[in-house]
Length: 451
Picture 1 (cartoon, rainbow, N blue to C red):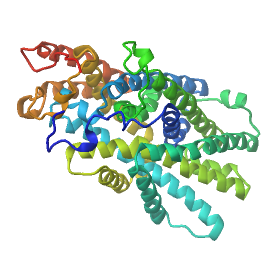
Picture 2: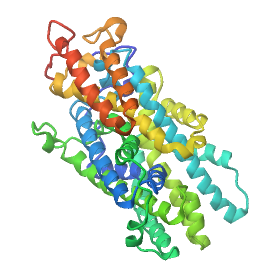
Picture 3: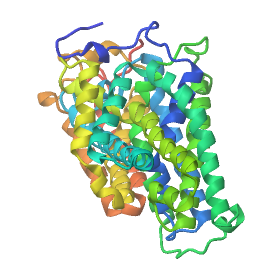
Picture 4: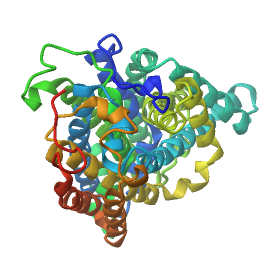
């Protein structure tokens, strides 16, 4: 393996010893990421522009798309043990890869800050009930620091937290749903029959929901590279090789994630607000129930932030600044997220998510086209760690890839209701057409070589 001062040791291919996440830990990590108030809020904000049944359809369509991308991208980490921020060196150039990686870090930091704020407000409500005093700023700093410390100890520590948090959160969210229905004298049938304006776009909703997770679609290799190898690891059958990620993401993402969005939808319909804290305050009369509900909201953010937001942005920072340790990368990412003050934009989460899907969808399209259509899934891992190797485009920037990326992003903005689809399709076609002539020994080394 080629070593160079530009390569952070944390970004090197994972060894068998470093692959210490079993299938159950992996499933819990995904469940932990999906139980968050960002998804809850998204479900609530989609009503009344869309009917409940249309929202449910959009949720299922979005998660089907995201799961497909997660599995496809995750195969890179599963087979070769390299993270997202390293793989895209082969697409955008050794230095150029830092630009799309930075675009990926922006929503990660944003959501970390937003969800930390939600948790701090929820804990503040508990303190007001207990001692009659709260300070949101101090709570943001304390809760942010606790999450950062947990993330610094790696995915294994994150999984251990989720083993405690997820079963409790699942039960408490179920109880919150029951209390919402009971206090509003409503049934699930009443919620599904709620009148709507029918003025929203189904595909806009799909993009908004998918936009939350397209970020993790890119970073799927970061997780699968830590997954324990099994006897099926080297299978030539894609579905057999990826059976563990399939199980974890269907269980943790589609089942639990869809449930959280639907609970948010129920809360939005019954109370007329998207704010989970206001929904709980307006629906729960018992102090004990209020305290449990607020703690649920708080710890739901923790279970999401460590894996979905802090870890990916830390790895990206370490690629830009190779001397950083993982702990330093996590700490800086958390600090940036809080300094962004994303709670100021809380009323516009749908638009932020859609723009994110338009910004990052093309990166996913370029990465998957590069891996599956040009390299045919065969990599020489050494190439991705050699700054003077085969990916030396002009000035270490692949201008062809950036041309496709820019065109894809602009196209997604023109057709905003289909932002992700348009950006993904344009990037796949454009990157394949423009890079195919180089996929030969005579050009830039895109010819697949066995590892």
